[in-house]
Each structure stands twice: as C-alpha cells, then as structure tokens.
Picture 1 (cartoon, rainbow, N blue to C red):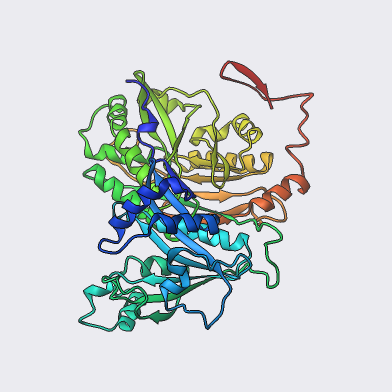
Picture 2 (cartoon, rainbow, N blue to C red):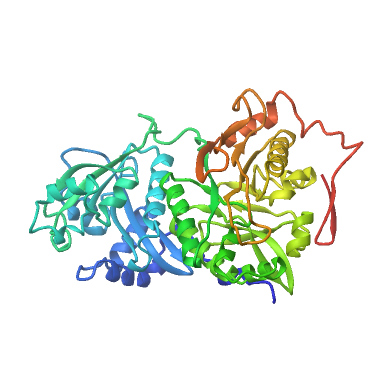
Length: 519
C-alpha cells in the first residue's frame, strides 16, 4: 500500500479579506443564507471594499466561500439610529464609516447552511475582535437577527423569546452563537430589517467590550501576548461496537475543549486500539494491520472535527501501513483543515515483538497559528537528542501521546518529559490511556496520569507541573501556557542549560534528507 495522500483528507480552511473577485460566490452565499431577502449588489460590495477593506472577511473551505462578515467603524453616539439598519449601514454602502471612531459595527454575517455547526462564525467574530484590539476600539456592536423567532411568534413576544434563548430554553442559530462569543444583549429593535420574515423584522442590539481599550489612544501601543490554551485528554479505553462509537467519544472531548476555547487538544498514543474491540480477535501482528484499515476514517473524522471545533488536534497516534510496512504515526490536524504527521522514531521491544512496528527517521516541527510545535510519541521522549533537535528547529512545546501498561512505564515517560523541559526551556504536555480492553492482546491494561510540565524556575509552578490529571480516571485538563514568560526564561532563567552546553565537548549530529546537521 502506498502512503496515504493526506491532501485528499485535508480541508483547506482559510480566513482572509474579502475581494471583489468573490462577488459572484458572495451573491450565491447570500441567496443560500437568506432566501427571499434581497442580497447586496456589486456596487455595495465595491463600496465596502473601497471604504473599509480591513473590515470585510470571508472563510474559504477548499477554495469555496463558506462564510463572510462585513463591518464598519462608527463614533458611538446614543442618538445614532441603531434601530435602523439602512441608516446605520448606509444601505450597505458604509460611506458613513469613521476611521477615527471608537466602535466597530457588524452589519452582516453569513454562514453557508452546509457548514453550520462548524463554528465558522467564531472565526469571523474572533477576526472582528482582533481588528477591534488592533485599532484600539472600545467595543463591537451588532444588530443581530433572531431567525428562530418565527417558530414561536404565536406563543411569545420577541422579548420573551430572547429571554428563553438567554436561559437556554430555546436555541437560536444567530443569537446563541453571539452569546457564546461574548456578546451581551442590551436591547431589542423592531422593524430593523422588515424583509427578514424569519425574525419577524426584529433584531437584538448586542455589545462586546474590548477590555484592552486604552481611552484617548487611537492604536494599541503594544501587542499583548495572549496565552496558549492547551487541553490534555486522559482517555478511557472501553469496549465499543463500531467506529461511530469511537467517533462519538472523541467528539465529546473535542466539543468540551472547544467550549473552553482551547488552542490545542492532545489525545493518547494508540487510543485507536479501542477499535480492535469491535473486530474479530486475531494475533497481534494481524490485529495491527486490521487497525490500520481504519486510518482513512480516522483521518476524515479528525480533519472535520478540527475545523468544526476550531481547534488544533494532536490525534494521538494510529497504525498505518505504507509500502507494506507498519508504522506508528501521530497526526496533527490543524484547525485550518491541513494535516501534518510524525512517525514514531524509537520502537519499544514490545511493539517490535507483538505488532511488528517499524521506526520513522525524521524529527518534524510543525508551524501552527499558535507557534511551532513538535510531537514525540511515547518512547521518543526518553531520548533527549530528539528534543534537542526539535528545540533547534524552533519548537516551544512538545506534545507527547503515550500508552503505558504499568506505573513504571508511565514514570519513565513523565520524568523524561520533565527533564526535557529543564534541558531545553520549553513546555511538554503528555496524554495517556486508562481502562482495559480484555480481549485485545498487548493492549489489555493501562496506567496514566497525564499532565502539562514547565521548566523548574521561580516564574513557573513551584513543582514545575502546570496541571495534571488524577491517575487512572477518564478526564481532561485545560491550562493556559504563557509563551512570553517562556521566552524571558530562556534569556534570563536561573540556569541556562541550552546556552551553557559544552559543544566543544559534545554535540548532537543528525541526518535529514541526506544532509548532516549539528545541534
């Protein structure tokens, strides 16, 4: 079997500025999103791009428009006609845009019905928030549709409907998304968009406040370093009956991590062996190849989930057959729909004996929207040279999916992970399995206490443990990692392990693509 072409599984998801070349697709998107309502004409879109191009965004999936939003800046005034969409948006031409204003006003957001539930609106709201911070604006105001209201209009008033949405008794596809993105409802506007029959003409008046706003300044003087939020899953293996059961269990954790707005979620090594409980029992070497047959479904599922939940996923690891050779591969599923992979480089005697796994031969470092990362699968973290190489390539955090049967095996992973933090001034997150698979050979018992570790110095946690799970129970942890703090530690820490290496006495030499490199 040839190596799988990962491009076939990728969702090329891009958030980018709107251009006039998008007009035809934008028009078609509007017709799908707002059937029966008159869409903007080309002149309105051209005007928006001429007046305020920074405020117009689209999300593109595999080269096709999936979502869009439009905005302008206004000077906040209580007497403005906030209740009148045509007046506040200049009928969509936004010629009333005030570059020196203090309020970003969102005049439209669209998500293709095909992609609803994929949290694309969060990407657009986040883009607006970042624009607001960058321009030091005070707030974002939106006049939000309530398209679910027509189903309840004969039972309750618009105000009562909004109260029910706020209390989670009713789901509204627009208002619920706005609330989950930090907006607060401040009012109800009748006759906002009379042609909006789904909302019965009503709209909410909602506000998001920029906590970084500096009164009197027209720009942000410094870039605030935002922490990176990491979720580590301690996954319980249990008997299942189908791949769908496995997918549901994974989606639960992804949904939870997304609710906490995590940037990364880490699953354990070979937690996919759970799938062997729903196939006929066989010898371990054959079972590993049966497990590899699930790889296309695994890739499809995690690629879609990474985009849907807007999170970078380290999907544990999975057996893969390439050119009739069995590998243990960890995949990175980025939230833009692209995929990276890291072969396990060091194979344990047990893996070699029972499964017939072969080693990889390169240390990969991956670019993400949160910086450069590396993945080392279980046993690999016990070899300090690999982390030296990853650090040289720019990694600031190492993700370690592991799978150990005993506490001794787990402690080897843990202690080596903590040592790598000290040696290289970086963070390490480890994720392992718990639970039992009674009829799956070489995957019967498991021990784990997953965690997130830091360098050992005054500015970090006193025991160099940012967070950790309780041992041997299914759970997850969520923790913010400060990469600016890490940068300062690398330059000014109590000890300088990386800088103080005696490279005249020893060094790491490695070969990659036929070339020799030194660290």
